Amino acid sequence: MKRDKVLIFDTTLRDGEQCPGASLNHREKIEIASQLARLNVDVIEAGFPIASPDDFRAVKAIAETVKGPRVAGLARCLEKDILRCAEAVEPAGRRGRIHVFLATSPIHRRFKLKKEKHEILKQAVDAITFARKHCADVEFSPEDATRTEADFLAEVVRAAIDAGASTVNIPDTVGYAVPHEFGALIASLYDKVPNISSAVINVHCHNDLGLAVANSLAALKNGARGVECTINGIGERAGNCALEEIAMALLTRRDSFGLETAIVTRELSRASRLVSRLTGMVVQRNKAIVGANAFAHEAGIHQDGILKERTTYEIMRPQDVGIDGSELILGKHSGRHAFREMLARMGFKLSPPELERAYKRFIELADKKKSIYDDDLTAIARDEMEEGCGLYVLDYLHVSTGTKTVPTATVRLKKGKEMIQDAACGDGPVDATLKTIDRIAGVKGKLVDYAIQAVTVGKDAQGEVSLRVAFGPDIISGKAASTDIVQASAAAYLGCVNRHLMSSVARK
Image (cartoon, rainbow, N blue to C red; front, top):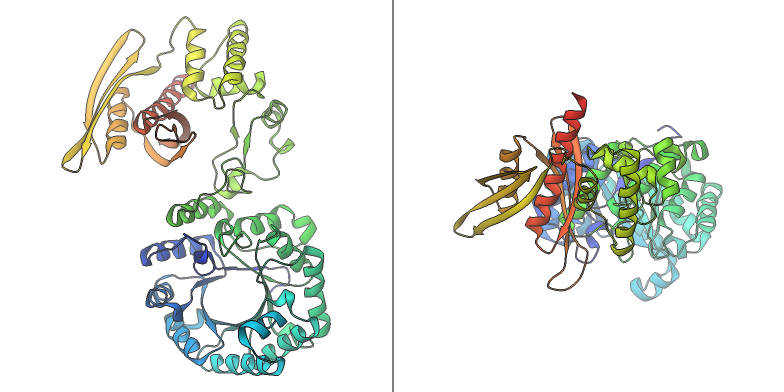
């Protein structure tokens, strides 16, 4: 293995699924594992086979169907666990891995295991030796390593490697470590363990103090060459080291670390959305790399800088993580440059006096409203122009749906002084509505992404619909809010249709 290569060990399907409320069914695990393969992780920890029949079946199915990454199963240092794990990963052949673990810290030895140091050492060695008889690739983790005596930890690591462990993982099981201490711990193992070069040293950091990524980076600086992590950082309690953050930190700051991964970073956003959707664990808007605000800018100074030169306020390209581009969020802090740019993207070309009047109205509205939507901008721009620019306006919407009713939508759009009405059926009320808009406008849009988020609380809460629509090679984003999510969907989609039509006219 190259010394500048960092192996990414993904444990979304094992540790990540232990996050309260994040349970996955068999098919969902296969879907996530397939995406992890597209992401090109080095190891997929597919589950804990002894834990349940479902876990066993999932690990075995992933070992059978997913190609590329190694497939690991977790096992306690018990023969029954190891045999069950070996059976589960066997279909992966040489890509199979048994990952055994045993706690080593004083608090675990005393209260959980009730064992002395020499007993822990023997059990670990015996388990690794037994696992090697059933699988060539064996990993060992001394659980709660960061609260284990440094000399005893070094003794355990040396014995594990002698017994045949090709990977030794150093877990910060309870997220207790801080970066300078954790980095020093890894460095001390390289000093104290004479056979350490015979194994890959992984780290598995939890985020209880919000330091999982920082601790992992400190470990890499001091010789570790594998990081155990999860998509979106999900996992026990406060979660784990986030895969997308560690991958992009190493890519963006290669000048500092001199290390690289094999991760296909363009798949990060897709992986994040998939895991969020299937686990029900919503990604916070300000989450690094994959959060909705990660490449969004509202402050006028920032927006002006981004429009002039992206690198003024962005250290990564959104396209590198699978996002189409930066987003300008219009609000009361936005300046004229961003306002003019947003109107231009929507197809409006206002004269300088019109633009100035429109901007003043926009600022007045932004002081009253927390969020400004495409409909708001359209209304402002239209009022300042003599002609409506041929844009469609939603005048009437009626949907019919139910368990024994074919979902149907009737839509009436206004274009200048003309009223156009049509109807269409679909898979649901939203689909029927969007198909009707397509029929009226004479376009064919493909919904690429669709998300609903509550922006107020209570039974009459407003729902914010965010979507992306592909019109051939063009992908356009839209957003709208309403207490009626079908109406919000129609407004957001219609905004995309108008923007596409205006840009088509501009190109001609």
